[in-house]
Amino acid sequence: MKSHSEILIPHHSEHLWRYTPWKRMHPTEPHDVPESRQMSITGAELIPSELPASEEISRSLLHEISKGEELVIANECMTIDVKASGHITSSSLKIVAKGHAQLMIRLVGEAGWAGLRIHGEVLSGGCLSVGFVNQLTSDSVFLRSEDWVIHRDARIEHATLSGGGLTCKSDVRINLADKGSECAVGAAIYGSEKRHDDHHFEIHHASSNTNSTLVSHAACDGASRSIGTGMLTIDEQCHQSDANQVFRNLLLSEKARAESIPELEVLADDIKAGHGAASAPVNPSQIHYLMSRGMNHEEAVGLIAEGFLIDAFREIRNKEVVDFLRDELTLHLQCLVI
Image (cartoon, rainbow, N blue to C red; front, side, top):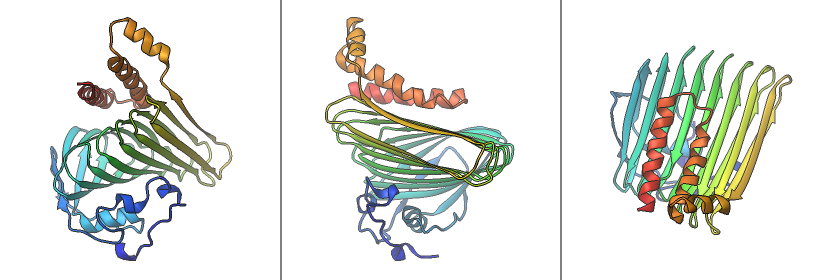
C-alpha cells in the first residue's frame, strides 16, 4: 500500500477532481502530511479502531492524519456532535449498524480546514438512517470521504444537508454488496455568497435484486457554485436491480452557477436504470405571489428554496431524520435572512 506522499496528484481531467482540484482541498501542499488536531465527538461512546488504508488520495490523507474511532449502533436513535476547531482538524470514524437504527451527525465549528472520513457497514437485515448536517463557519474548508457496505437484505438511508463552510468537497460511496440490499440517498445543498460545494456520489450494485435512489437538490444564491456528480454502476449478473439518480438545481441569482453530471455504467440485463439533471432560475411568479401575501423578497425566496431542498429527502422513509434536517434547514435560512 502506497503512503500518501507516494500517491500521484490526480489530474484535473479525472472525473472526481475536475471541478475542485486536489491542491485546492489540501490544507497545506498537495503531498504534505500535516499535523492535525483530533475533532471532538460527543453524544456516543467511541472505542479506538483502525480504518482500512486506501490509495485514493483524500482517504489516504485522512487515514494518515487522523486517529480512528469506532461506533457500534444497534436498534437505537443517536445524535452526535462533531466539533471542528483549530487550524487543521480531522477525524476517522468506523460505524457498524445492527438492527434498525438512526444516526444524526451535526458538524459544527470554526476550523480553518476540517477533514472527516467515515467507513461504515449495515449488517444483514438491518436498516440505518443517517442525517448529516454541515454547519461549519462560512470561511472553513471541508473535505469529506465516506464508504459504506450494505449487506444482505439491509438498507441505508443517507441524507445530507450542506450549508456550511466556504469550500467543500464530499465523496460518498455506497456498495450494495449482497442480494436484497438497497439505499436511498438524498442531498440538499444551499449556496450563498461565494460558497463552493462539490458533491460526488458513487453507488455500486454488486449483487442481484438490489435497489438504489439518489436525489440531489442544490439551491444557489449570490455568487455560489454547486457541483453534483454521480456514478451508478451495475455489475454483470446483477439482474432484477433497480437504480435511479436525479440532480436538480435552483438558481436564485444571476451570478450563481450549478453543474450536474449523472453517469451510468450498466453491465447487466433485466434491470431498470435511469438518470436525469435539470437547472432553472426561480420562478418570478412564485415570488410575486408570496410577496402579495405579505412576505418581503428575501422571505419569499427563502420559502421557495426551503421547499425545493426538503424535496431532496422524499425517498427517506425515516420521519425523525427528515424532521431533524428540516429544522436545521429552517434555522439556517432564517439566520441568513436576519
